[in-house]
Image (spheres, protein in one colour):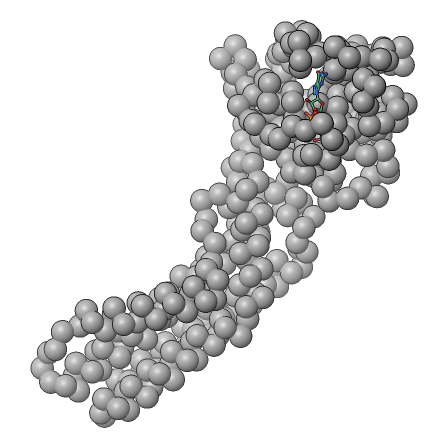
Length: 333
Ligand SMILES: Nc1nc2c(ncn2[C@@H]2O[C@H](COP(=O)(O)OP(=O)(O)OP(=O)(O)O)[C@@H](O)[C@H]2O)c(=O)[nH]1
Ligand SMILES: [Mg+2]
């Protein structure tokens, strides 16, 4: 499960300000005249500051929930987030938001007390204005802090929702080999496909039903032929997905004249993955059989399935191979 998918982001400061303003006046209007002017004024002023507090607290609570979700998230999600946001920042910003919430609570308490003790309506109005200004400035003085949580939410809530109970197959390999095309072809997902490399910048998840069992299949950004520690955050998403989630990796080659890398480099990427993830179950696929120029099997001892997403060649073989491998997993079928 993606712990952010059901969370709402905090509003932008301007929107919060507007929401506070409308709710403050609504809250006062809801209180009709009772007993006498002083009594009514007091009730209205208290309602106003409570409304402001409630709205601001709601938005800060959303930030807190986003931070809490990070702290409790599965390591996969935490690692993916740390590629784009510094872990220390997430934690320290989370703590600062909690601090601000306490300040807001204290302001409400202090001014509720002042308003209840004030003797006349002008004095109450003065305290209410002061309270609203101070409450608003708690958030207005920290626009970057709120913005940080808006951005984390924007990124995190769009990450795929992964089930730990269902088998997960990752489709990986060099750029432009047809990873997204395969995921589109065999699963419910519709990742973007284009004739140029580096089209996929984010992981995405689809589902495939096989003999009434649902499995997850993940598209990943292309991997470059370079050492693990030189990979950029886009590629690292693929690596993290393999590390944390992969039950099986479908590694694809491009033997066509349009290949981004010569075959030796494509194999080198595979070797690096194998070295890094010993024991990982890998299905090798040589795609674009319809325009193949190179026979990958000449370079590799292991079984390689030849597929074409244009003609459908090899897809049934790939499906049955996948099923056989999945049947060996304990968590599955
Ligand atoms: N002829 C032929 N073209 C294919 C085949 N599979 C994919 N393509 C084409 O190859 C290009 C790249 O396909 P993608 O599915 O975007 O490749 P990718 O591996 O996801 O690429 P990145 O996300 O950029 O790493 C597209 O123009 C596809 O239409 C195939 O089997 N045969
Ligand atoms: Mg792609």
